[in-house]
Length: 237
Image 1 (cartoon, helix red, strand yellow):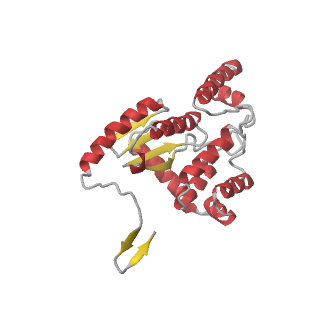
Image 2: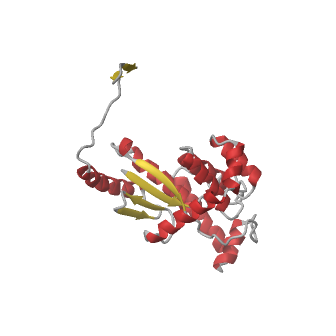
Image 3: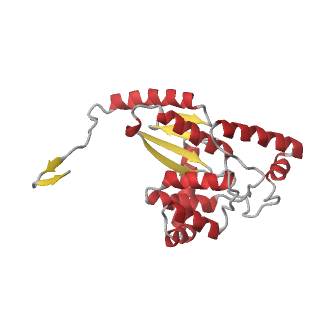
């Protein structure tokens, strides 16, 4: 059963939602039958790479939302507590606000190598905990290499238009499916979960969707692999 997850690596609730989803999946007995695909969703495509107040998240949000600096600090402290409850360490004092397009380009390249989830996790941590600048090519090269990409592949991701087109296609697809924001989970194209729902709620939806999926796939069998011989006397262990 396929689960598609739209997120932005600079969305605080997306990282929390990822952890909640992982907690639900860990309690799901049929998790080996689950295929997860991460998809791109940019919350602010028009944001410059170096926005005003880039080095001060509190001031950036205060100006953007038209609230006071103290209100912004209080709001971020509340989000940090939510993150802590999910096992995450948000360092808003370190965060560098930027456009997320380049990070999504890296994710799209990583997906072609089977490294999509690894890229999401590394980029989330780099942004929310380490305070890395995710619009800096050198930083992105370092992060890409750390998950298993080569420097050449990172450069390809950052320069080849096909990867930006894939980012944009993901965003357009999310809109067609009714996503108003992220995180946005689509399960078997029948159920959707919007926002960072608790793991217990995600688990309930997983169980319901999986029961229906299994009913629709009656020929599915579970195989425990052992020593085998294939046609042509090709025996392996």
